[in-house]
Length: 229
View 1 (tube, rainbow, N blue to C red):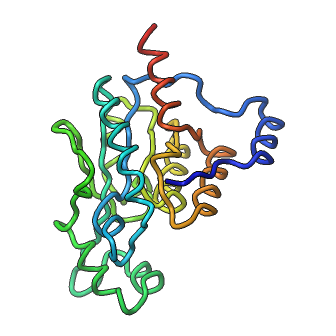
View 2: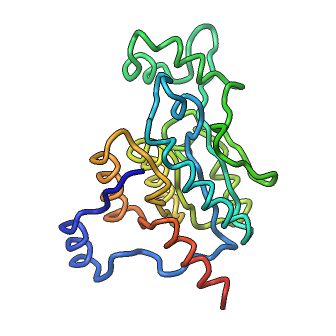
């Protein structure tokens, strides 16, 4: 798990700009959902083509958080990545041709084929949890998934974001959430990147312009403030 946080110079900048650091002092459990991004074999398994070693370090914090959220009826949504192929062409050729190395391209394509997505085995999935597939970094960009429609149907206005990578799919989803008028919260101890610098950079981007950055304990504290009224 990453031990770095937002730098003091960024905290000072935020305070000077808006007079407070955190965006949200309370979170409404009735209108909040947890999105757990890309915690699947391609990213979590040792030796996988897109392995994020730190993803395994956040398994315990995620399991701890989901247990507490289920107890107060906050929906848990596992967001997994898949890409389809038609006539030998992927629905995201740009990604496979320019982002994925030649030597692992075919293995990555197979891993991301529909039907091969499962939540990483060390994570606890509840009977009432939901799984949804996305085909772009952001789960909320148009055409990526049905996540926005699902959230609207549940009357959700706040999304807690966990998973991997902090600076890629988690950050992309958080940015789009805010642009769609959802309150976005990055759960800092439940996100993992390939390096401390990338993890911290994403948190600093979010706290300045796109949403809040809270630990899982801070999230639970804010949810309980509303619950205990």
